[in-house]
Length: 93
Image (cartoon, rainbow, N blue to C red; front, side, top):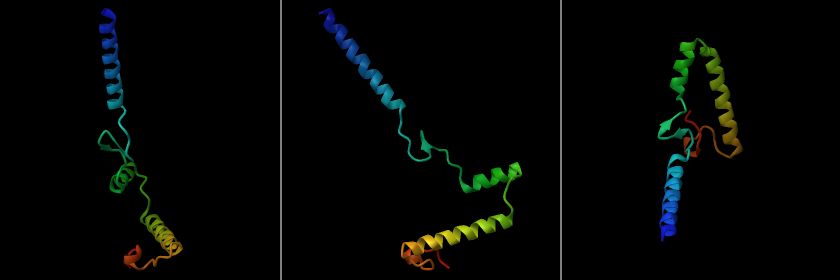
């Protein structure tokens, strides 16, 4: 009889440990964990860069924007979409 009580206690303890482990190992979803977003926004990055004195120049940003637009157009063409047609996924001109 004492062995049965001990067995129950071990089972209950094991179930409790398993429940605690499952609760503490929350799944990660992208850049969020525990309900908080850890990925900074573009605005936050810009503020931090300016505060640190390492923000890119306006000319550098324009160059990057042009490169990104060209990459976007190339990818749209590869997929058979028209870069100038928003209905086909292209940016409006």
